[in-house]
Image (cartoon, rainbow, N blue to C red; front, side, top):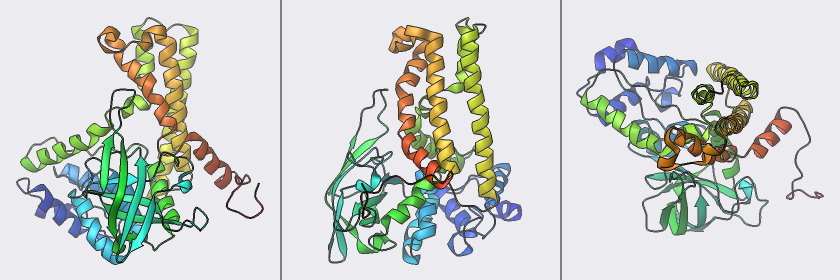
Length: 395
């Protein structure tokens, strides 16, 4: 790969052209199948490839939801025509995607969704509403769950579509959050249309496909920011600008995670670092961070050995919620009533007020804490499953 990069990297090239060349070489994601922009190498090769590009002063493929959720799902479930149509524009960053799963009445009980898809010739007509859709206002496409069979048990009547977002039957409305940001959207479908060729894995199989997406979502709770070489050139500047535009949507996510690394510095600044109660709370936060690091390392080792995302993603997700909660508790204990101040009146404490109104989202986004506990209880500990109202004889 070093030889290929040395021979082909051109800092004066166009970003799209370079990424197309990199993708077609197979070195952008070497763990992908050889038939689909990879080399068929073990998963650990992807991290090595990124480092080789960085060492060479070169930029890599696109990042974000499109790469970490959509592309893996397509690799596992899409047919050849769909892969040919959608994968390369994801790799180059030409197409941005959003996730259209949750609904106002179907969040944790996602299988209870009511957005409908009705067959009309070679197309499906979509009607309904989705919510909490990050990036929907700027997306070119969306991965959509819709009900295609209302008579079937709820998990069996769902289908998975790849829907174009830029059409008159789709309206995207930003949601104003209590922390002042507007990262999420609600999306309304009023006879929107999607081609039958964009139906993944056939009608009624959407829940199985969605489980793959959700597994990757829990394993990549915080989408990593790409690293860029220190040198500058038009192509590197274009890649940095693209990344900044994408990650600006998630600028408040460190606050959502509780800002645990600020707990002890905050205690020192407020002259409470020697208070036994504060020290105990800070130590608990530090312990959570350390064990979370070990969980992350274990998950990375599993990926490097070729294992698909599993229940450990739920451990990481649940641990992030607990850490955020304990961090918010620590910040509150240190600042007291001052932690409620925001704006100019808050002074140096303004960030903490944003933490306190952002951390509740950590226990909801990407699957609630209750859902993660069910997954761990049933799939790891072997506990009895929750009663299923779709099954005969259930209560």
